Length: 154
Image (cartoon, rainbow, N blue to C red; front, side, top):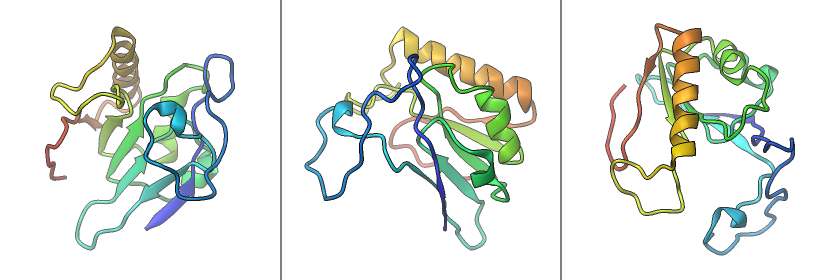
């Protein structure tokens, strides 16, 4: 398992909405405001004989932290703003253009799990911009839009 530093995305004011860290087990979060944005990590578990899968739930990063990972599948957060410079090209380059990209963190995760996932027009527009950027920069990369509670094989 590789665990690497990640950075939470910045809002349109180039700051974090809910800065902070947890130092003890918190109560179950009720809203996004209950989830402070400090000490963010990304993970790439290793499964013998399986594909390498990178999961990054936050939408900013340092390229050096991702060097050498080169996953087969990258589950990547869709950014909430465009303040992170060249997010998709920089990220896909750092990950050596994975064969499959699964956009994550683009739905309303404060709602019940239903298919299709609940989105606002703004959420959908962010997703569409992300998918278009992946297609432009890495045209051979497969993009898989996940559905809740649906198993996938890679």
